[in-house]
Image (tube, one colour):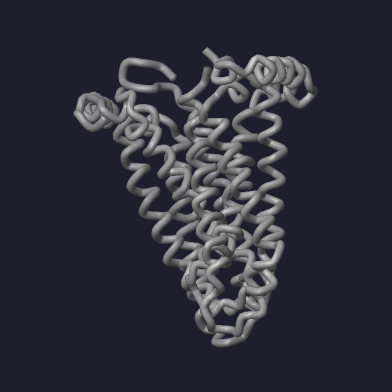
Length: 172
Length: 174
């Protein structure tokens, strides 16, 4: 198929670039290991602040003012961009490994769904003023959001066990 | 070859005995043989990590002066969720070590990880030994006492250290 041939030449080209080769083959801890660390610490703050937000919306610790907790959306976005950046580097290092695995696309879709949910919950809660308890709809969305982030973590972790091709020339 | 081989014969014997013991525990056998056991436990380990950083990390940032309008006591009520995350990670962590003990007991990154967990633990004990009570007594809106800010900073750095060392485990396998 034409699209497949196109993707194949993309993998070949990308894996031959200096950045991809350095990330994959450098023995330095500042290459691949550091990118992995960024992706993990970013995950902890990104998913972590989402969890704090979701459990509060679900009704945990009503003494936390929802509008004050909104400040943690900053932490969420910092975590998001750290992981978008480190994620792109991981993709550049092993494009064939990620892009030939259907689970990778599922993970991206789940992340997009989670971000849309977080924004939707925030909009739902914004109209409440100083009221401590969120609406039933916001709570239901928060429960779905929690499940979504756990699913993202499982999808991400399982990528390492479900890949079929490591690089253009090597199987996983 | 092993970090523990250099001049500590007793420690080395203890580590080798521990290695043999752990390898034959039921949880070790389980994780080595169950088909999807390892990836699922890893995912749980990352979930526990997110629960911990989402509550303890969020509390640490508040101690450092972030989102000052949130009452400390109310935010502190999220901490049990973080403790449950820590328990999940202790349990899954013990299973990893039991399954392939040599990969951890003779691994420099594992020593760092244990060191950072110990720093976080000592920091928590110092915090609850007095700092926390003084923190609750500060009037709303006032900046947290220096000791509390320090505890928040040490905690954040220690957990980032734990996560980094954890990620480096695979690169320092014996």
